[in-house]
Length: 209
Ligand SMILES: O=P(O)(O)OC[C@H]1O[C@H](OP(=O)(O)OP(=O)(O)O)[C@H](O)[C@@H]1O
Ligand SMILES: O=c1cc[nH]c(=O)[nH]1
Ligand SMILES: [Mg+2]
Image (tube, rainbow, N blue to C red; front, side, top):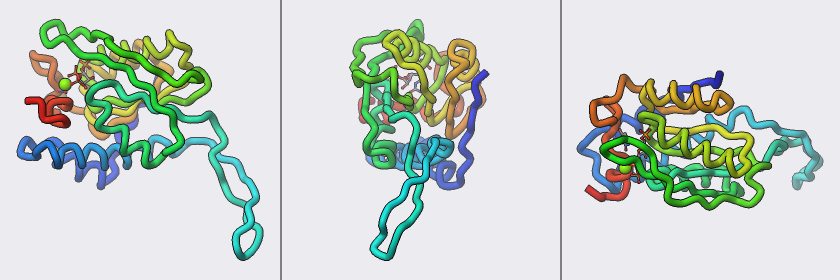
């Protein structure tokens, strides 16, 4: 079974309080999601393997550490995942980026895939799959199915806010994928929204409501 990490870092929690607040407008919402994503990247990559190498500083030789594991890939789930991708890319600028486009039918809550474009060496990369919201889990499970079908072997999931139902569904469908959250909320409402959540992440990021 995968591990669920709730990132209780004070800066993440402080910024999330403004993200949740319905008075926060699009411009600030977008900036805060970007900042939280960058902070989450720091925690999510904490266990990446490093190796010791030698460099010459202006003063003399030094033994330093460099990343030694798989190359990284970032997979934002369109559209709301885009809001987190720049922040994470600032921390790991060499990562390749793939996109999976999905929307959730508002009536049936079923995910519909409309776009997939991945780096051609996706099977060799450690992928960070990002979506601010993990509600029923349908979108993330479908996105990971799609990635695995195209050869992806190793990935971790990063979401801002999740409902317990969504976490359970992802853990059952993909027990190999660890989950990193800024918050694990109480439940879903009758429309499939996370309670208390933050509303519709895509609409708040892009000002489409
Ligand atoms: O866990 P689920 O029940 O599948 O719901 C979560 C999904 O819903 C939202 O996307 P939405 O369909 O609103 O698309 P958007 O990102 O284009 O706004 C969100 O960004 C997730 O992808
Ligand atoms: O609460 C929710 C659930 C799905 N998608 C969102 O953007 N918010
Ligand atoms: Mg949306």
